[in-house]
Length: 418
Image (cartoon, rainbow, N blue to C red; front, side, top):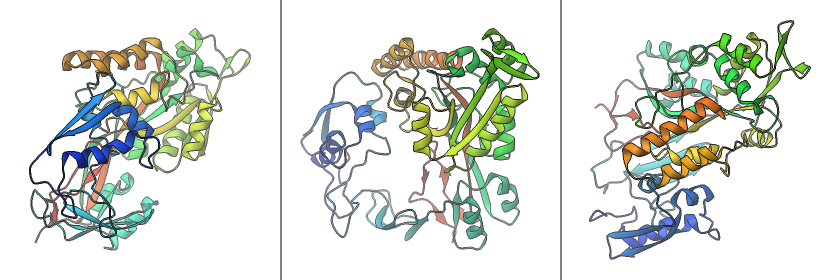
């Protein structure tokens, strides 16, 4: 650890303080227990060796361990108090939170990298993108994150600063691989080929808010396999015929019944429902009967898991810690906690374990390339697009940028021009 680190209350950041901050995450009896992160860290134990060395022991070899320590849910916090309920180490000190409304921080004058750019930062929650847009134009806020893509070009004409950058958040379909028509991999392949990702990005995101996705990770990341998004409705229909479906009166029939697919999604991210609706249109275009059901995330998640529905459109950051294995394990391992499509593939399971326990970078890239090829061939999920975060800000804001994990960082160097 670095010398001279202090928490916001002035107390030193010691090796033991790090142990005390991280250990509760893996303790099922502690309120800070987090099952997902505990599984990612896979700690057998940890201890302090003097004031500056922390010793971690994992239950098995874990090549992604250092990446896992940067998970958003792992934070080095000191003892809390009334004055410092969140006793952290960064450039801004927590002062106030109103759930779903406001988060306020003040400058940390003793920050190790120098004076922060603002005396105070207020993050105001706005569940309605249109409301956030109006607040920006009225001068009530200085910056809007995830700005409406459809209004992005116009707002810059008013003198506002607008910028986008690709992130690792993927919009994708989890597929019901255990029951219904999508239990057949040929039909899953056909559905994937029937979706025009370019058309979705242009229609839903005005061409500025995303990049069509052929695989899990965005291009330019070291883990991204060279798999292009493919739109081929003619080949999709060939695959449906290979799967035993018969086209009658412009509609595909399977076992004497219409081939019907129900798409599930939720509305807390504005791009989800229209993406589902456009997907529905593409499926109907080749003769697949389709419908969309919009509900809450949890309800949609549970429905697909129970076999009530065929495709679940959701949006995840696929590289929250920089390592590729943990999210794939959650989504697609046979025992994955978020494997709502009930996908089971022993070969994929073995590769995910091999990737987690292999330390040589080139070999790890080979393993995860093979994983992505299995996903492309077997289609347990369909990547649709990677989000490019659109941000607008006052013209005089400097030093800000979009982080690839889609977390927006306001650092000590970000400030308004004087």
